[in-house]
Image 1 (cartoon, helix red, strand yellow):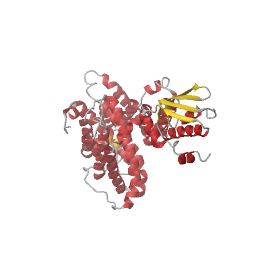
Image 2 (image 1 turned 60 degrees about the vertical axis):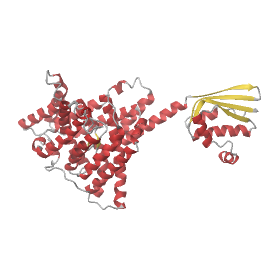
Image 3 (image 1 turned 30 degrees about the vertical axis):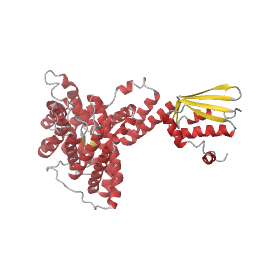
Length: 496
């Protein structure tokens, strides 16, 4: 694939340029806020966002997706920074990048197939709620000016697209930020601006190697954090890629995205930045503002750095209310409103998975835990549903002498009890035939259940014949079954 293919870079230049500028403006306060969460200087988050966005534009597998410093990652860094300092965070960032590249080569992105649609919906809804909740500190204990500015900002965002001629060609979030900044500078009202969030850097980032001893002790300190950052970073990136795939109706290369995130994090760590990942909020801003290709991600990163370093006086004048309005638009746009409508139509199990994912993610502020709980519940409901699709019938072939059982369905850990309960082990009979031609044995638990049935029948003096095993089931049964091994039979039945 060409490094600069027209389709991936230059098929939407105007839309990508404007959306990239909007995203860059929205990245600034977030990067500063996430730096504060992690307990590091604002420069660390801003340099990280610049490095990650620029590198991922070239190495990522999902054009149009925005990656930078994120809140989910920042929350995981707090303890490491507090106990060991910034240099260890930079070392952990480099290790995170290396682990993510390994994950890409191991094709761990394929595991996304096990994340059901209801988990993705719950994840998206939880993120929308968390994005909104993150704006609340800017809307509490403030003067009425902030509320007026925020409402006006939301009005511009939602009404500007209806303005003839220019409404559709200029992204409304960009108009909102420019108009409210002008109003703020002209009126001189006393409200928080980006400049109040922390000091902006005034130099370009420089290459630096983390100042930590290169020994096993350092590795044991940073490894737990690097593993957590790797999992959360890849999880959020894969989820975001799935959502952007849906929004744009285009596919993406998830394994390339894993490697790209790793390379971007190594770049960030070497430039004095913290680890980051894909951002659902900013990616949605980018797509809604017209961004589609890698160019939008590159412009977002470059414009972010140029604005912070060379236009810091202007950037520091942007009122937080303008950015709060943009982020509220993002949370409204991110939330899956159909999922509330679908609660009536969808099965109870699907609704429970979605709501549990939302509740756990919002409750813990940890996306990985929320998704883990969702996937676990979805797996349990699925196993229960498939386990119930099991029918076992029987007929007398020769009265008092021979009976045939027919097993239809899936036999595995969730259905093995039902399988065993269907056989009459007390019946005095010479021969039992078990027809398994319409059954499938999946695991060791299923094979053990079959073993117990065969062994118990034989103990009663009944001859047992198994017929019709399909090839896959026969492989499992041949490997793990013990009913033809007297010593193993004795051990399995525990001598009784």
